[in-house]
Image 1 (cartoon, rainbow, N blue to C red):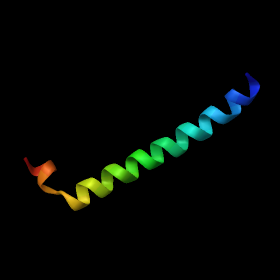
Image 2 (cartoon, helix red, strand yellow):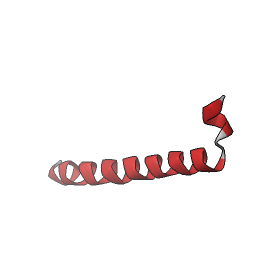
Image 3 (tube, rainbow, N blue to C red):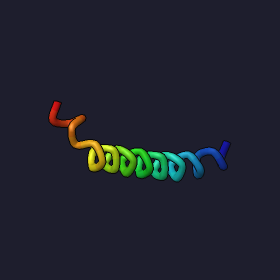
Image 4 (cartoon, rainbow, N blue to C red):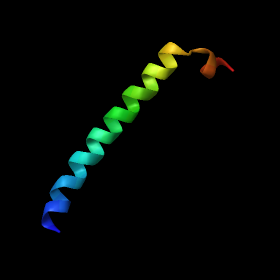
Length: 36
């Protein structure tokens, strides 16, 4: 359980960074999705 408590924040941070980066890349490649 202690290992989970130390791993979870790291995984969450990496996941949020990855998701944010992916979203920005999609919006950069397909700006029409935002305009519509």
